[in-house]
Length: 255
Image (cartoon, rainbow, N blue to C red):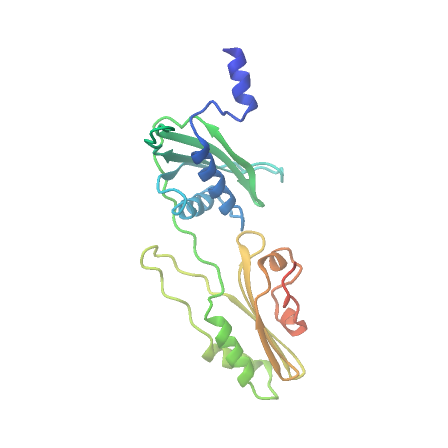
């Protein structure tokens, strides 16, 4: 028995219930919710439930727990996934139904402990955390910003630009009737350099949710609107500011 216990520990609790299919679903969901990082176990749990709708309708999160730590390497947000596989009645290779549970760990950087099999908690029931408010610059902002910049007169001041943006850019989208979650409007930044105009719209922030960024500028009469890559913005390589728009940084995604 002692040898069996050591063997189970050596293979990440492979002796706990589970099979290749449940392992695959657990790994897929964990990878899907790794980025952008979240600020609580409940937010990771909501992302996991949303991500699992495709891979497995028999997926649940049965535990979520925050465990704060000053250690930047520590797991500070813990989840327990539960995955059910119906098995199969194949004549030659039948598979028995199995329900498997997995410990998964995250911190402010994302996934730090891959799913590992464990016994399912006794009496555990699925959790249903609240939805995460969307933090994104809506798609409709791109053509609207291009139209604004193209239509500006040759000589403008900041007040003129702000007034046109206030009239012309899309307003906040209505509350999602299913989730009842208001969206946070993107933050606007405007800068002028002589007759050149730069505008930035940023949603979210690098430290918690990840940043969605839209940049646009009119430089020497030519208008350009673009979205730098998530990696460029998240790393701080391309700040989501109006000055960045004037400098036209981040127009080419990294290879």
